[in-house]
Length: 178
Image (tube, rainbow, N blue to C red; front, side, top):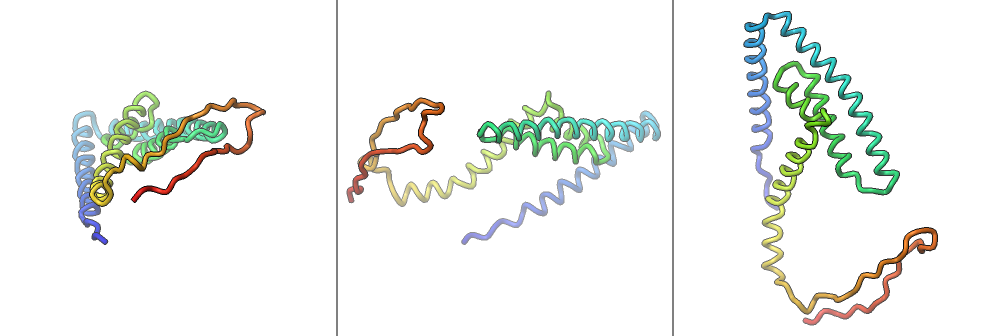
């Protein structure tokens, strides 16, 4: 089995350290520009507004998640929103302007769709990179055989109380040709 690359943890530590340096530098700059107490007041105000937004959007997201479960839908969007609201809420509780900006982008309903698309793009890119070697290996090991295609047809059944509890598929299965 291939060993995992050990570069991710040092990268995360480096990014967090750089973020801390940028936050402190920005706090000092804003403190010099408008004064220490107005800067502290802005940070406290952002934390209070962030906590209120987190509670409101968290409740809204939770209700959306429950609604999708109640209707039997896959709650992909709702789970993504819940993760974004959670991450955004944590970022809003941290002191600093950069973390607050990213936190508001994750929590606000106006900017969350953009954050959702960005997150989906990152996840798809990561999955494609991880799956590419596996798919290439599978393609080399077993080339496509057109004779292995099973023909069939889809029949719509009416929905409602007359619909059977289990779907029955009738047909024949032939052994693949060698």
